Image 1 (tube, rainbow, N blue to C red):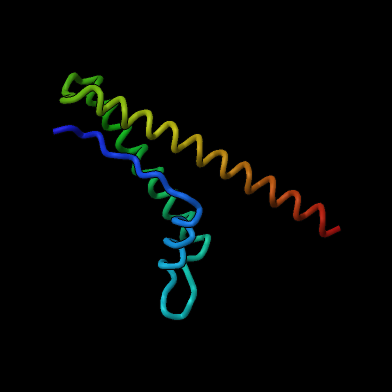
Image 2: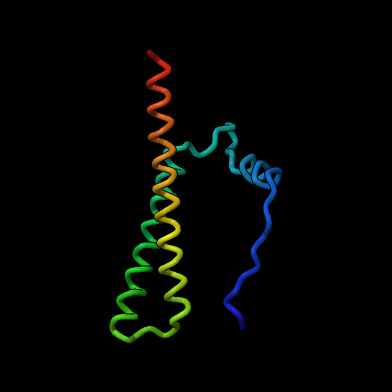
Length: 101
């Protein structure tokens, strides 16, 4: 049995449909702060998994070297993505403060 899962292609319409289904009865959806907090939690969990994989590799107790390498790569990519999101948010904040003068 393979651990590889099929990657589902998503279109913008699919994303909008899923976003509209995320709204509750009052019409409000999860706010940006909550989404950001969830994303940070996911990045943190990937970092923890990566550290465990690295310690398993160092001690020789790793069961599947490929899965350990994948966990480390996922953590690296998610951290890079989070840093880019932070940079874009800071850039947007600076642009807003410049336009309000």
